[in-house]
Length: 162
Image (cartoon, rainbow, N blue to C red; front, side, top):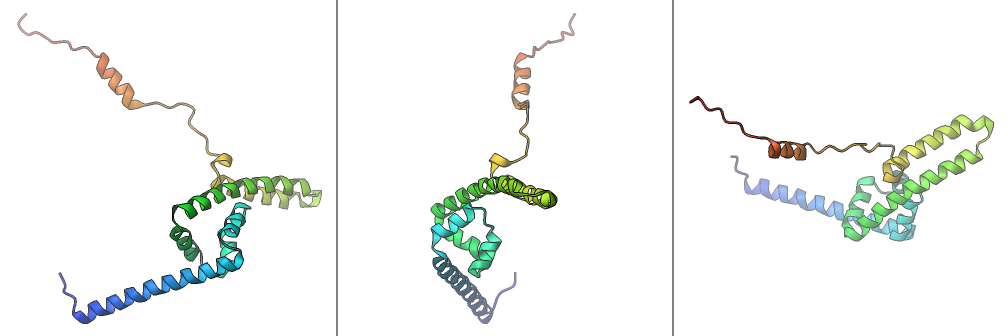
């Protein structure tokens, strides 16, 4: 096991302190940008209306990792609001497909289909309600079946004396 010198330990501590300060500065920048955008409620509403995180981060001028840290630092309340907004975003995207299809002209059918398909796909990822994953039609509990078989078995002893 290698022993670190006092200078190496001090250097590592300095690096750790600088990294922590940089993260705090990023969160401070994020808080200021979010406040300028209209606050936490405006962010949640933007996401719920179907806005993407990458587009939001571009508008705010922050990175997606910084945004994720901001959500996590908000505690359970902010994370729950964020989760509800993502589910609502799936509903918003599904509703947008109807508007896109209704507004399409004959010349725009292929483009409208592509836009609808992408929004439907994203809606299925954001909300279980629109997921195209099929649930199993039959559930078989092999553990219970094995236990039932063991309970019903009979023991036959072979007697060699006969």
